[in-house]
Image (cartoon, rainbow, N blue to C red; front, side, top):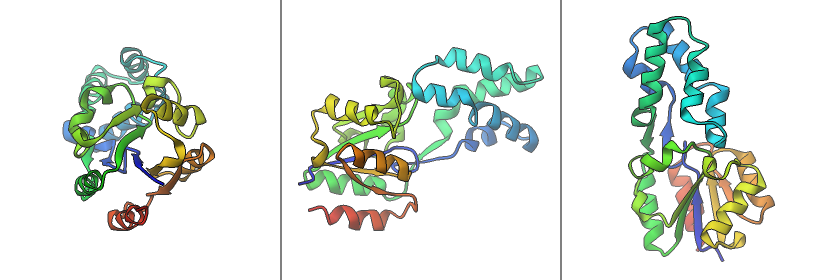
Length: 203
């Protein structure tokens, strides 16, 4: 019997777009693209999600690839403020979270994300106060779809895999969850009403 719903964060609970902060701060299109590539489409971004590099070291490496002081200043500003712009609540997810909580489900987040999210998750996740627990990859230095990530989820919150249902937008992460005994649904199409029907069918 499913008692807990586990959600990914980016492009599930939230809409994530790495270009938003750059578009807000930088008005030159070519420069905006360059900064976005340097900061957000970078190996350092993955290392931050893995929790194996500090923000200071990541930014230092990013800036080393830029050519001018202006570029470095803009990149630093975008890096400092990305969490204020790049994530918005996904329409309809707050209502769905409330409905699931009213039905008595335990609610959890399991996301590949940096330590920055520990500071701002209450603002970027819809109805964050209703969740019973959140786990970000950088905390445990492993990532979905690694089995260790799911093991940390189950262990930290005392969950039985077969009592959990996982919602993620990447099929490999769903496959990883299933390999650990947790069934799930791939939310790649972003259709909240279809997801609602799937979750309602769990009762």
